Image 1 (cartoon, rainbow, N blue to C red):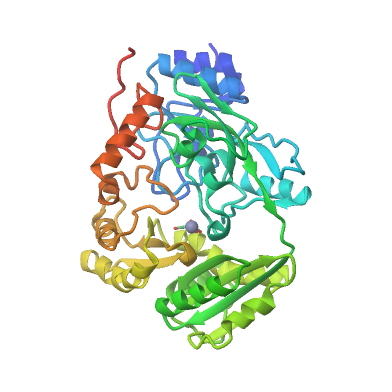
Image 2 (tube, protein in one colour; image 1 turned 30 degrees about the vertical axis):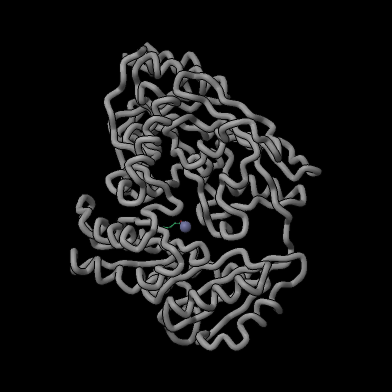
Length: 464
Ligand code: 2HG
Ligand code: ZN
């Protein structure tokens, strides 16, 4: 008997992808079964790792025939439980589809396999004199396919938009094994529905992304980062607005607070950024063809709300300032398993939310800690709650109700996954949700792809 044992579907998979790429051994499966947060975890039937689009198509066709459910997975850096099994699904890992075509240097475009990591794509673009517009802290593990599936935003979103805005073409496999292919993409193409746009943010519920044609952006050699201490979030908002209005080279604006900096210093050994602690911090990065520091400093001149500041242009010093922001996620996880809420607000309601959210959490779970940080330029805030029971969602509910009451969104960039499904109705209308369900049925009529993600779980539908 082969290592696929008595599972006939696993044996069929082995005939498609080769035995070495069907993982049944619990030890080999383990890293595919728990997500980055450690909050979401489940047993898979097995893990299958196809090496080409054709193999993905054959795998999905066989799964659909066998009424087997599938969770597509890239770098498994998601934070909402959407990339790990929950009820014995098959994990379909796209990591082997990691080919990067040569950069089209004239067009400023590249075709990337779903399994290529963001860091590899960034280096590949850089080597050809270009840059990629999306960047995020998990760049070494996050994959292009997963980033498209979740429409990742990241730290440069205010300048270049999310993954959806980088897409010029897409290749994806539907549940029945048919392939949607619009490659290489065209800059202008108004021929009906934008399927790539629809698949971005569909979280593996409609089709499995296998390749994408991506636009590149100019490589900007001169950078400046400013870390500004401010008295509160209102000051951070007004300084950030002033910079956006007068400094066209701004590409990132991030906010964080005293409690987050304390955690980063505790867990990374970094010294405090200034000689004293401040209530709130705004980090700004500008990038241009020539040194953007003078115009950034000029915009800060007379910004009375700035209590202290550090400006860096040199790579090493810039990284040192960024670590106070980028190392929040790992420092929070070092304290425990957080409940992660990634919310967006109209900029006009951002300060009110920040002012009320800690109280809203304390009312439900008095001992809980709320660590806030995020992309203030996009109205996005990451609310990480520590000190909660894994399944007690009372505090999550209080935060998301507050968001909805202020006209925000319950997920800004991490997606809905399984974590936010119960609250989708708070910020999407019944007509929106019914339309999404109809789209889901037209792509995946039997409901085998990532069941329970975005929309509530439904039984597999019979073959028609
Ligand atoms: C970031 O902005 C990521 O660093 C992760 O979106 C946010 O850990 C989080 O809550
Ligand atoms: Zn983020």
